[in-house]
Length: 352
Image 1 (cartoon, rainbow, N blue to C red):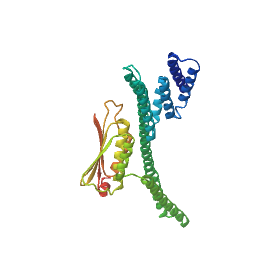
Image 2: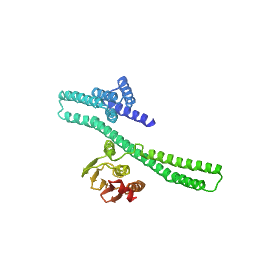
Image 3: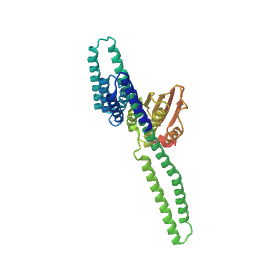
Image 4: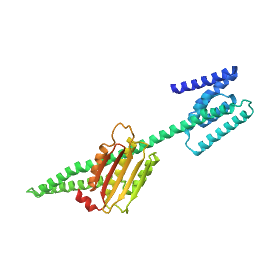
C-alpha cells in the first residue's frame, strides 16, 4: 500500500509540475491534479477506463506523460479477452487520428515525427510491456501447475508402492504363521480361532492388494494419453514435437503402457525445470517386438546443474517392472531419455 500511494503521488507531482511549467495556475491546476489522482486510484480496478481517461487528458493538456505510461502498462497487463484488445486498439486509433488532425494545423514540419514518437513511447510500448509481463506470469503459473500435478501423481504412486511392499509383506507373514498354527496340535477352539485369524489375514491382504491397485490404476494414464500430456505442455508454453514411426500396435501390458507415459512425462518435466523455453522432441518408434520411447531436449549454455534426480531413478525401476530398459544420455548440448518397452507381456514377466 505505501508503494502504491508513493506511485500515485509521484505521477500526480510529475504531470502537475509539467503543466505548471506550461503556465497553468490556480483552480485549473488543482482540478487537473485531482483528476490525475482519481485516474491513478481507479487504475487497478478499471484499467481500461483509466487508460481512456489518460488519453483524453493527454489530448486536452498535451501532457499527462507519466499517467499515460502507468495506465498503458496496467491496461496491457490486464488484457485477457478480444473485447479488451478491440477497446484498447480503438482508443489508440482515435488518439492517433486526433493527433494527426492537430499536426496538420501546425506549421511546424518536425512536429509530426515528434508526436508519432510520443504515441509509440508513451502508449504502445507500455501496453506491449504490460502484455508481455502478463503472458510471462501466466506461462510460469502453468509451468508450476504442471510440475505440481506431476509431483502429486508421483508421490501417490510411491505411497501405493510402499503400502504394497511393507503392509502386504507383514500380512503375508501373519497369514503363513496362522496357517502353520492351524495345522498344529491345538485344541479345537483354538484351531477355530487360528483359522479365523488366518482367514482375516488373507482377506486383509486381498483387500490391501485391491485398494493399492485401485490407487495405482485410478486414472492411471497410458500410451493413449501421451497426446493429452503434450497438449497440456504446449498450453503451458513448451515447444514440443512428436514423431511416430513403424506400425503402431496396442500395448497389452498396462505396466508398459503406463511406463511409456511416465517416460514422456519425466522428459517433459525435466525440460521445463532445466531447459524452459527450449524445444523438446518426443519419438515413438515401433519395432517388431518392442516400443522405443525417446524424449530429447536441448540444453541451455549455462545451467546450474545437470537434469535428473530421484525421479529418473524411480522411472528406471518402473520401466524395469514392465520388462523394459531405460537409458539416460546427458550430453553437452542435449539431454535424452530412451526407453525400450516390450510389446508382449510374457517378455515383461520373464525379464522381471
